[in-house]
Length: 459
Ligand SMILES: Cc1cc2nc3c(=O)[nH]c(=O)nc-3n(C[C@H](O)[C@H](O)[C@H](O)COP(=O)(O)OP(=O)(O)OC[C@H]3O[C@@H](n4cnc5c(N)ncnc54)[C@H](O)[C@@H]3O)c2cc1C
Ligand SMILES: NC(=O)c1ccc[n+]([C@@H]2O[C@H](COP(=O)([O-])OP(=O)(O)OC[C@H]3O[C@@H](n4cnc5c(N)ncnc54)[C@H](O)[C@@H]3O)[C@@H](O)[C@H]2O)c1
Image (cartoon, rainbow, N blue to C red; front, side, top):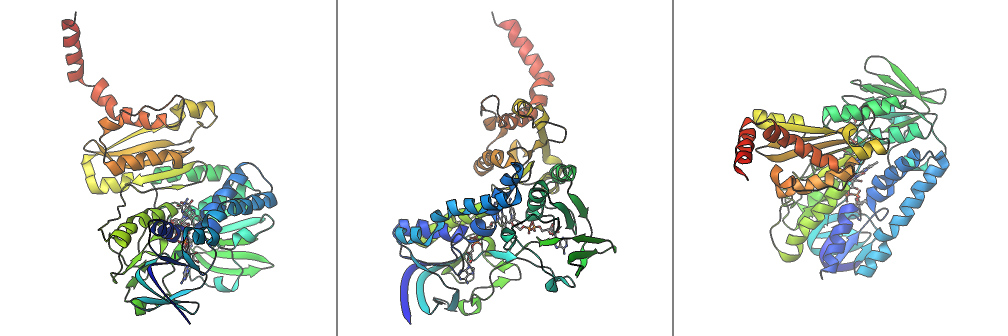
């Protein structure tokens, strides 16, 4: 039995855990990093990276085996950055075992007892498989197993029209599969409804069948095909079933009861400072109850907890400037409040301004400005943006600019100082800001009177 004493012990070597470990060790702390599965976590091995690689391969028209080879190649290229070797070179002690707390200050990992001044739980999440009659006894895929397919499914039935469901639907349709998405409520239901509508229409135009507002009641296998019976009695039969109905925090089996760390059904409870009910233990990333489950959020939170972990300084995680994007074509990106949420919060104080992709010269020149190609929408309150929605080409790239705007709480007049090179999609940002000033400048009697007066006076 080995005993280790350390400054910081990080559980989980995924997006959040790796960032904390790298930051802490490079600033001089002793760090133990524990991982029970693959280094790199969900994002590298079964989430962001393979899904974006598959979407790319599908857009390029690759064959299914070539697309899956591209997925594996992409993972292999990025993997060294997240590897045990790299983290050991940085100075971390890496233990490949399952961690379990044994007391508020100690945990066990594969027979090693670790006592740490501070712990960071970054154990992520797993697919949430709903309780549907028959589901447990049929073969189904999740984001963890779909990457093992070697030939294109004939008909992929997807349960859940969230980010995973819609990205996988488009990729598989483009790779040649028939695809049906079954969504109990509304597909991309947390997004701006109008922007989600643009994505849904694009997928449907490519041949994806989208069934909304009907839950799956029963699943069975008939003649080797998977048969899903919906709440209205309709049946959908396909060759493969992908379950993409949300995530479940990996907060069980951690021995949290021994560590005096409180959790709810949806994950570990933390305050704005990301501290759990045990003041020595922090939690970041997907494992947090009610958190935003994205890689860049886990990374951002890692940066936030470094302050109290290493310097004993207070720190607070903000949410209002955190963007996210769904990488379908067109992409859908959001930061801050959607129009519906902003309307509820600010009512008639809210101004919404927008610009259409169809009017953007770069989009026109590159054949991406057709009907239904998308838009940018700014939600403005007292001359400051409180939310931005972009649906269209490269929306995920464009939203980063607005994250800075919201983070600095910039006024529209300041943002108007930005100049985008011509011709770029980024000009759309400027166009939306102009739309805010157009009525104030071009439709104002007061401005016209002032200009006329000055023109009479200047020599
Ligand atoms: C299909 C899919 C696509 C996605 N696409 C995107 C995207 O495009 N952009 C984006 O921002 N986000 C995306 N996400 C979300 C993103 O993957 C997660 O938000 C991110 O990985 C969370 O990071 P994390 O550090 O909290 O957890 P993870 O990266 O999952 O890491 C947790 C690690 O902890 C380990 N672990 C768990 N329990 C223990 C234990 N007891 N002991 C030791 N180790 C343990 C796990 O094995 C795992 O390696 C996607 C997710 C999925 C499923
Ligand atoms: N581009 C990205 O950043 C990206 C991509 C994929 C995943 N992710 C992250 O991973 C998370 C999980 O993705 P997800 O798509 O699994 O979850 P999700 O919560 O985004 O969507 C799940 C969908 O499944 C539906 N659903 C639930 N139970 C159902 C049932 N029984 N029958 C039919 N529909 C049902 C829900 O109404 C919901 O629309 C995302 O919320 C996001 O945080 C991010």
